[in-house]
Length: 280
Ligand SMILES: [Zn+2]
Image 1 (tube, protein in one colour):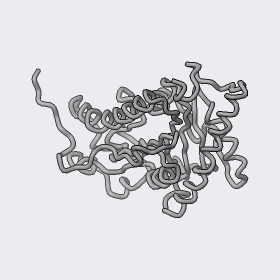
Image 2 (image 1 turned 120 degrees about the vertical axis):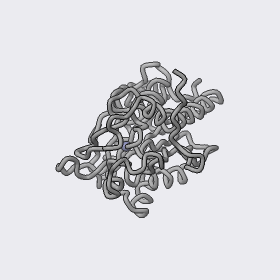
Image 3 (image 1 turned 90 degrees about the horizontal axis):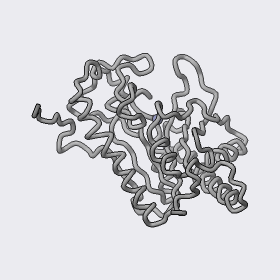
Image 4 (image 1 turned 90 degrees about the vertical axis):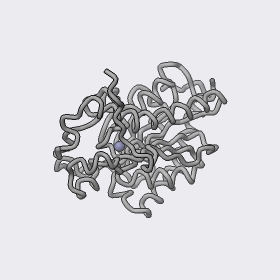
């Protein structure tokens, strides 16, 4: 039974995550689960042509650039996943059937077929867990020092999915706790030039998500998952424009949440009854 562990990443390959503004002063805590499109060398190209690896099935196009620009403006902690979601999806439980997909949208992923348990475990051990362990460590640290935290998961969605064009510019996603999502959704709609999805084009669930249910809901942290349409943020100019917009609206939404709490009318409290993490 003493099989040697399979290793995935070679010593000269990049770490599975990168962090910016590690000591950022902002209450906002930004994550990019699908920010990267790199594949571990050992996985080669997963049997896919380069064109497929540049598509949205491999990563959230534009999300990393937007997240970096936003983190810069807010001075917010930011963690980005380095590797493609096709290696392992960092916004799924490792037990979920969609953790390592064999088909994405309509594209079969040959390199993920017939994966041995040891090979799947290596992806979880070397990509998924280091990323989430770093998030947990940072959130623990902030909690211990009484720092308020609002978790913002940055994603992007393809303008056309399975042949159907999507009307939204952005989507505000939440599940059990809409405390922060609700004011942000309202503010985005008040911008006047946007079609904003309310739990569109996706809704958060424990099966289809990991970051928000685990790091947001279970900790009682205010949170939101943001989905921006990829054609709007594919280039640096669009990333900057959206970063400007969100750097304005995220603090405004937090202000509304704080006012609602002060007035004792925060009707969207988390199940734990906790407010901002800074409450202890
Ligand atoms: Zn995503």
